[in-house]
Image (cartoon, rainbow, N blue to C red):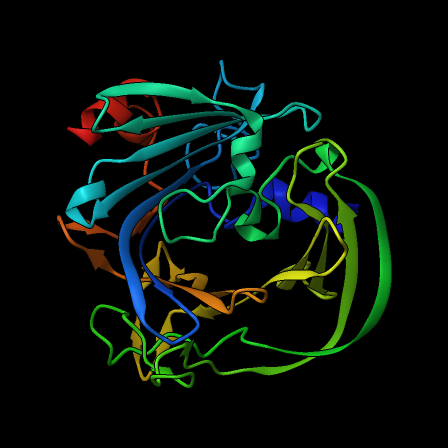
Length: 309
């Protein structure tokens, strides 16, 4: 449970993050049926270590996280957005709101929406995020099932010659199913399982996550359907953004973050590829650790309406 608790409480290891992301949804033939561009915002009102006020934002001590996502491409879904409000009490379910431009209103979604795709063509759930997309006490039956070495993309996965951080691909039916990834040997990974005991209608029966024993960082996740058969496999890569003498700075130090993700639906052979980039359509750019203005700009129901118009 400690490993799941640690990643659930920290996610991206920054007080505030803005990730511009490009996603590619590929079917079993390798055809890209959907391309989405989105802005993903994470904001920690408690457990703050860098951005004032520290260590929490007065008046928001009962919240763990505000998180929103705004879709900007394609035009049909431009302005679609979602807002998750996480309670500090990990026994409580997050509040989930969404703005759909075609209806021009903000709607509150049920808890079961955490296990449904956000948009057509996508196979990703909110529950999948960081291998810890739900409050950890809404899951149960935690257990460690194995320990051993593992190959993972922990660094060297940011290419300074790639101006917008778009990445390169290889493999699959059309040579673009997998991101190019540099991997290294993790001496010991701890393999843990958990079950969605708080979600009676969840389409999965359990998840299995590989954690780096040195840092607690999630390296890989496999989920299983209600029959106990393998459902989806997730792996990603991380990096310090320091390469060939060039750096992306996060204050006094080079930026560290995730660079890309593979999410493979094993049963349908559908691949979702995600890439953190520097900028997406509409001029939305990467940044971290901005001030409290982020809350009004992105993390309220009125912000969803404003961004969606």
